[in-house]
Every structure is written in C-alpha cells, then in structure tokens.
Image (cartoon, rainbow, N blue to C red; front, side, top):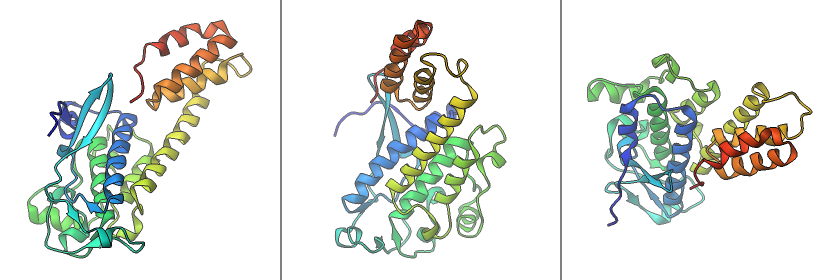
Amino acid sequence: MPLLEGRSLHSLVLDGAIPWQRSVALIRQVLAAVGALHRAGALHRDLKASNCLVTQRQGVELLRVLDFGLAKIDRPELMSVTPRSTRGPFVGTLAYAAPEQITERPVDTRADLYAIGMILYYLLARRLPFTGSDYRVARAIVEEEPPRPSALTPTVEAPVALEDLVLRALAKDPGERFASADDFDLALVELLDAENTSSAAALRPCPLGHSGSDEAQTALAAWTCFEYSRARESAARAAVLNRAWSPLALLMSLVPDDA
C-alpha cells in the first residue's frame, strides 16, 4: 500500500475553525471519491472525519478517503436503475450512521451521502449534532432533527444556504436527501457560484466602467473558490486592460497551481 502522509479532517477540526469555503472544497473531494465508489458498485458504510486524510500535492490540499474495511460490494443491485441497496445488521460508526442503518432497514448509496453531510456539519460546527451515550445518539439520529450548525455553534460563519444543504443531506427519509454524490456536488457548486456573484457585487474593487474591473472581480471570486489558475489568468487579463491592476496580477501569480 502507498504511504500517505497527512492529517485527517478530524485532526484539522481540533486545530480550530475552518473557513466554510475550505470545508466545501474538501467535501467536494470526498464526494468525488465516493461518487466513483458508488459507480463501481459499492458502499463505503463507514465514512467519517477520521477516515478522510488531507495530504499535500504541489502546495494544494488533496483529500483521500480511507478505510474500506466495511465496504459492501453488491454489484448487481448497486448498478441497477432502481434504488441501490443492501440489507443487514448495523455496521459503521454510530455518530455518522444514517437512520436506516441503525434501524436495519435497506441501505443504499444515500446512507453514504448522509455520512458526508455529517462530516460537513462537523467541519462547520466543530462538533456533531448528537452526543451522549450510544443509546442517546442512536435515538436522536432516528427521532430528532439536527439543529443548524450556527444554532449549535454561534461562531459559525457559513451561508444559510449551505446550512440548508447540510440539513437536506441529514434528512431522516432517504428520499429527501440528494439522489447521488453528483447531485450533492452540483448543489455545492451552485451555492459557490451564487456566493461568489454576491461577494463580487458587494466588494467591487473599483467603480463599474473602469477598464479591467470585471476581470479583476472574476479573479477574486476564483481565488475564494481555490480556482487558482483561473484567478491568475483573469488577473493577468485585468492588468493588460488597465495597468492599475498590476499589483493584483502580481499577487495572484504567487498562489500555487491547482490540484
């Protein structure tokens, strides 16, 4: 097996608050990995913050999903058009388990998406919504609605729309969750686009009409989304149109390459 050096998401959370943009960027990598797993015809069944390792490649965070010891391979069922499911006694980590896992109902790919929603909740709030004894946690997962991350941790600085997505992923009924990892990721991309548009409008670096202002705003929006190549290219175009943007182009030239 390859030697991977890095830190788990659980370890990163213990260091302090993580900006919501970084949390989303990391969760999108989890979704990419789990989406590939689901398309291959398997369920992970033990996704949690400590099973997601953040490594570095050329100065950019690269996340790896680990620990497939409880993965369930059932290709004929999982690759069908109908809901892909498997049945059996509870396995996994209780705090991240979906209600159907605890009650031993049929489990499909949406149970993994529930766990990813719980990981994102943990990144935002720095704690899980349900704590206490195993009985208390299991009962809460099945019967209680999780509070918003900002209600649990008032210092959370995440958009309301992001909290809405987290709560959707944690819906008791699998049918109310995202249908697939791709759907979950698309919702996050749309949220980022909306937030970047809003931020660009609120933080315009100069009045409308100044040459290069649109390109400069695009560069700043891309930078907040960790899209460094697009940020550099947009800043360079702004500097060509207006030399006043040369400092921005210089600043963007210092950011690392994309993963």
